[in-house]
Length: 276
Image (cartoon, rainbow, N blue to C red; front, side, top):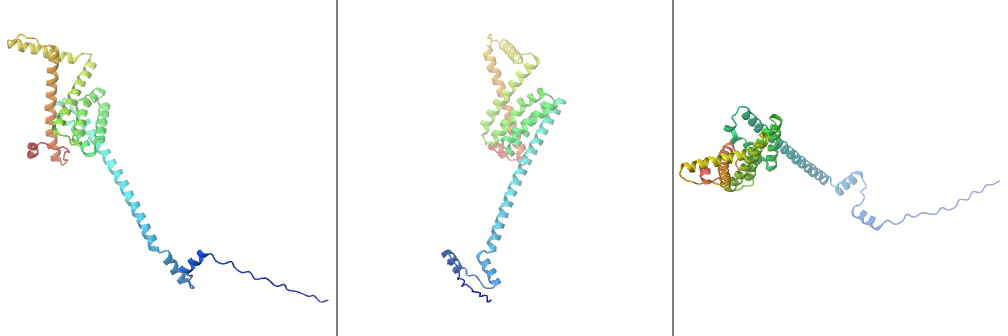
């Protein structure tokens, strides 16, 4: 029995025509025959220099940002350390001066750390130095000494540092600082009156009235001054006292900071500039 095997004809499959965009890409970048030429073509299409340059630029920008962040961190750390140092110096100097009863001889130096801190690092640093000094004195000596330093020296140093930092004129700075010093002195008197349960301000005005009446009677003037005149005289004398004190502080601090190498922001008078 013969087996007849019949082979059917297999149809040919034609590939689809390439896309027009693919034709243009192949025409622009023909596929090389050898592997070396293919690698060279890939390098020509994607040059490694541009990638290396862009990587170097990114690395450089990252390093610059890291350096700027490090400089800012070091600057903040240096400012914090200097504020703490100035606060500790001012607090310990005031504490030792009170303990040894030599406060009147060194009272002109108590606002100096706050002024230096304000000139070097700004108004915020001066305020932090004043607050840290008050807290240190509160811990060492109690609230009375801390309040005394704040009213008599801390606010004056902060005001003077603010005026110098803002490059204010000497006349304006002396007037404002004198008013602040006078208000601080009045606050100190009121605080002392509250602590000892006695009106010290009334005692001062009564003694001034009695002394002035005695002087007028000795001079042959039969006039008794009123209490309003006594208050005006007391305020005038207080402002003059504070004004002379602030004026001397301006001169002394300007000379000291100039010799120390810290140039103040305000311009001193010509006669003082020539003397320096």
